[in-house]
Each structure stands twice: as structure tokens, then as C-alpha cells.
Image (cartoon, rainbow, N blue to C red):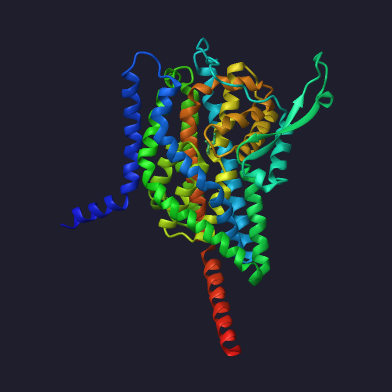
Length: 476
Ligand code: ASP
């Protein structure tokens, strides 16, 4: 009789995850049924109606991101003493660095070994119809990297909530082709979208400052802690909409796609190379890193991250998944001082799936174009793919935009991004899942490594609180 009981409790514990997985499957079924129900392609308006519920779900998640990121980072860092937050910070940097470098290296090895751009049918239609695809802005790698650094230091915090800085190049009217970049005029504008990197850095500095202020900074610390807690309560409500939300998001995406053949056709080898890389990184490399750092197997932790993985797949956005990731780690019993520190920063700068994909895609396109890959070019790709993954926003297909920088390293024009665009919507979902799971596993690893220090810090804080009450009582 014990079996059905255990089965029941397992079902109820994982009810939400099961419902969300069912939501994805129902979304795929709904998408295909709706496609088959019409002989003409679905219009934008019709797709918008199908996507409506999914859009509402995404809007709710997105609304939580900003207060959650700033509140969580300030609260986590502000509640730790400086030397401990420094140690946790260094551990996070090592983790982000190691996982990103191993992901890029794995991607490069696989794409050079499998050579998808060479073995694919050379007569295949590689260049997909441009359709509505707008080529990214023409900009040099140097300017992209400098913009990344500029955005770390926003000049106006309120503006950073909705805009980010970007350099614009103005070419001379009568270009002869012999001008160098030193002859171009430089201007700048502000693009629509949150400058998350700038806000993360502000959160870190604010947290350190509050930590240093001690008692004087307590009201501010209480404010940010309470803000983050409130956002988590709202997340707890929104999370229950995720099965329906992902169902409509997936169904409407399937209606938008006009080239399913590319996944198995000319881009099939490229698709499989990225997928294989993501699989090896997610289940192999990250598991080894987990074991080396904690001396424990990661499978229990990974199995508890189902909800996170499905939401990342459904939304294709690490930022939108952030509230759900934090909720899941809270449910797993992890220390919020670690999760609220490691995960929001990770969701912004640590994107292993994106880094791996950027490297594979750039080398795949070079192979299609018949460009020889010298060692210096391979090194260039690995460095720019890492930078591109740090600079990519946690939103759908952001990697496609930062890819321009990687292509520039191998001497390819921005327009060549259109070669891979037909399958990018699907690869994006897989790489986002790896991006998010990697951050969540990082939080588990760093928490296990820091547990002794965290317990000591809690004991010290409790001692100080007791002393303070004792002191105030004797004063009275
Ligand atoms: N969609 C990805 C994310 O949010 C970014 C990308 O690779 O395009 O993590």
C-alpha cells in the first residue's frame, strides 16, 4: 500500500512541473492542429489572438524582473559582511568564467570535428528568404565592446530601466571605400530595452555600501529585502499561470514558423551540432563541475529544476524565467543570501548555451562561405563569443543580435546571420534552458561551498542582536 501513497505525494509535489510540461505538449499539439486547420498562412493578427494569453503571462513575469533583480542583489549583498560577499562573488566569477569557457571550447571542438557547413548539401538553399528580417546595425566590434562597458556605468538610473546606450556610425556621404573607421563620424542613441547590466552593477555597489553602513543602512536594507520578498510572493501567484502561458506561447510560435524543413534539411547538421553541444554541456560538463565542487551527484538537484527548464523553454527568456528560478531554489531550501546574489547576476551575464551557440554558428557560417579557420581566427571567435554571451540580453533571440560581433571577427558581414535564422527560434529555446539551468546549478554549488561561512555569519548576527537587546535593556 506504500507505493500508491508515495506515487501520490510525488505527483502532488511536482504537480506544477507536470502541468507545465503538459502545457508545452498541448501547445505543440494546438500549434499543429491550428496550422492544419487552414490552407492559407496564419496572419499576424490571428497569431496575435492565439498568443494573447501567453503574452499576458510574459508581461506579468517581465514586470517582476526589474524590482526583483535590484531588490534581490542589494538585499543579498547588503546582508553579508564585505569579506564574505567578496568570497561568494569570487566563487561566482570562477563559476561563470569556467562554465562559459568550457561551453565555448566544446562548441568550437564539435563544429570543427563535425564540420556541418561542409557536409551539408552544398546546393541546399542556405540563404533563407529575408522576409521581415532586419539586418542588425552596422557597427564595429570595438564599438560593441565599448558600448558594453559604457552600459555597465549608466549615467541615469531611471533611464537605465528602459533604455541602453548604443554608438551610431555616420559614414561620409560619398564613400570611396578607402576610408578607415577613423574617418567616420560617431554619434549615439538610446535603444529600447532595460540596461540590466548597469542595474546589476548598481545593485552590487549599493549592496556593498549598505553592508558597510551597518546600523545606519538598516532601513534601506529592510526596504530592498522587503521589495524582493514582495516580488517573490507575486511570483508565487504568477507561477500557477505558467502551464497555460507556455501552451499559448508555444502554439503561436509554431504558427509563425514557415520553414520547418530547415530543421531537418540544409540546417539539420548545424542544428544537431548545437543541440549535441548543449546536451553534453548541460548533462556532462556541468555535472562534472558540480561533482568536483560538492562531492555530490547533481541528478537530484537537476530533477528539482523541471519547472525552471520548462519555463525557460516556453518563454525563451532567461530574464523572464528569473522569478521562477528564484522560487524553485527557495523551494529546494537554498539560502536566499546565495540565490539572490548568484542567480540574478548569472541571468544577466552568464549564458553558456548562448556562448556555445555563438561559436558554433560563426564557424558554421564560415564553413558555408568557404572561409579557412586559422588558429588566430578560432581564438578570436572564442573571445568574441564569450563577450557576445555576456552582452546578450536575457530575451528571445538576443544572441542573434550580438552574433554580428563574432561574425566580424571572421570577416563576415552582419547580413550572414540570415543563414541560420530559420532554425534560430527553436535553438533559442534549448540554449535558454541551458543558460537558466546553469545559473540554478551554480547557486546550488556556491551555497554548498559557502555553507560553513554562512552559518558562522548567521551565528554572529544572532549574537550581535542578543547583545544589542541586552544593552538596550540595561540602559532602560
Ligand atoms: N534567449 C536567450 C536567453 O534569454 C538569449 C539568446 O541566446 O538569444 O537566455
